[in-house]
Amino acid sequence: MEETDREAVATAVQRVAGMLQRPDQLDKVEQYRRREARKKASVEARLKAAIQSQLDGVRTGLSQLHNALVDVKDIRCSLANVSNDWRKSINTIENLKDVKDAVVQHSQLAAAVENLKNIFSVPEIVQETHDLIEQGELLQAHRKLMDLECSRDDLMYEQYRMDSKNTHDMNLIRSYFGEVQSLSEELAKQLWMVLQRSMGTVRKDPTMLVSVVRIIEREEKIDRRMLDRMKQTGFMPPGRPKKWKEKMFEVLEGTVSSRIEGTQSETRESDKMWLVRLLEITRKYVLDDLIVVKNLMVQCFPLHYNIFNVFFNLYHRVLSARVQELASEDLEANEIVSLLTWVLNTYTSVDMMGHPELFVEVDVNSLEPLLPQQVVDELLSKYIQTLTSNITGWLRKALETDKKDWKKETEPEADQDGYFQTTLPAIVFQIFEQNLQVAAQINETFKEQVLRLCLKQMNSFLIRYREEAIALKEDHLKDRKLPHFYTQYMIAIINNCQTFKESINSLKKKYSHTAENTQNDAAIEKTLGDVAKDGCAFLLDEVFMDLEQHLNELLTRKWLSGSNAVDTICATVEDYFYDFAKIKKPYNKASCLKCVCYHSIQI
Image (cartoon, rainbow, N blue to C red; front, side, top):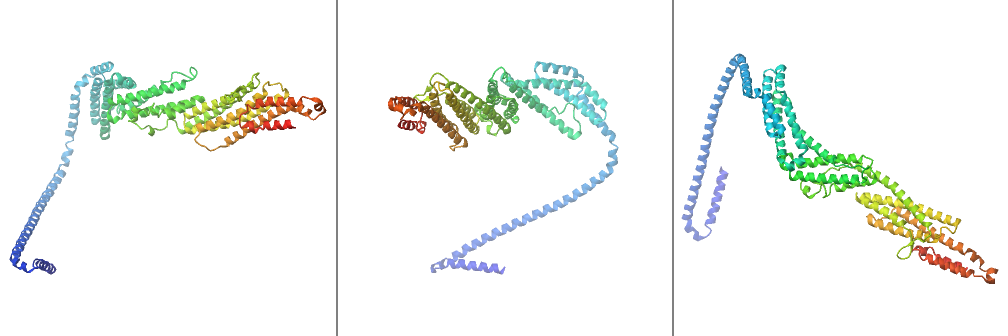
């Protein structure tokens, strides 16, 4: 307290010193004193008011605490009295068992009286309900069915409450209402029939579909109510829970499955393009159905059904099963490509599941693959095996055809620059081009794999090509008159090597994104060089065999006495040069034919 007083005095001294800093301020001392007095009075008044308010609050709180204490004492006394009364009335409650039984019986009788009208008119209501079902008035039929089931269930419940072990009376009630269950099944059949035709019904008579959904929703509510009551009482009416909503989705899945299976109308025996037609019809049906679901059917179902996603997933699941079934069949190579192209590309494209009208509702990228990767790999492996066998056969056949051309009595064809050639390179690379175009429809990785296969097959083919060229030369040596245009076709074989090289580079540039050379590239390059080198050597052999006799005459007595050997050599060389001019670069230089022939003349 003393410290507070000292701080107050110090503050006051400081304030006075601040007011009286100049001599002329002494005249205002009285004015300063009155102002400070007013401030002091104001502060004291506020302080008194605050203290008085606090005192009033404390007084009110004490009063409330006193009243609460009195109330607690009163409640304690009342609870004690209730406890005493309860102990005294235990025996009295036990004596009221007869009253309790009477109340139960009264409740049962009240339920019986309430349902008496329905009980006596059960046969009539059953017939009316049956007629309404046949007339297609499903909502009215269901209303009457609900009334019948309600009467039956209430009676059985009251019987269960009165004597749950009395099976005779329970069976009696169940027997009396026996046709109700048949009506329920009959109505259910009509509902499932409407759902099975839902794609057509929603276009022609959407109100019928709405009625079916409303009936199913009613039954779902009744199922939930009965399940809740069973948890409390242990009683469940016959035929419950019906689970019609669950059954509805099963029927819709069966409907989707039937529509997918119904698209196949042709087989491989009747049409080689059966799979292409099947996949295209399936694509059209699925897309049309999903657009109908989005634009029409969604309006017939409650929002919480999320019916578009239900149908979307149903179609995806059924299509996956159908595609896997197709994949398990013994498909041909072209059918494997058609199936994989459809599965990997068409299915998620804008022509099907990625259609603009569907894209807003779903994300096609979130879909599970139609075919497991293992199945895709197995199909690709099977296709590669078949393609390998096919290419081998096609190349063998092409080579056999080219060999037949070697024995023709006409010169080989010449290109626009006059170089001899055969149709073999064009045929070979047409085979490769077609298969690479097919592979590109699947994906880039598979296209690269097929390209590597083609190059590998190309190397094997060139080895056989070289062997056949050697065989051609050996056959020619047996009878140099055959084939008649041996030299020209050997030149064509050499030129084909350059055509092969250019075509390979063109294929790699068009179908491969990697610029690296592979082992196949080096092997092909070497084999082509060997074939061209052999061809040039064979041509040189042919020249020397024609010149050998005349070269041997040079510098002999016969030549000195007069011989036309030199003229013959020159004419022969000129004739061959005319043919050798039709060899493509670089083989026309690499063979060094001109140089060799020139030296032969010098000799």
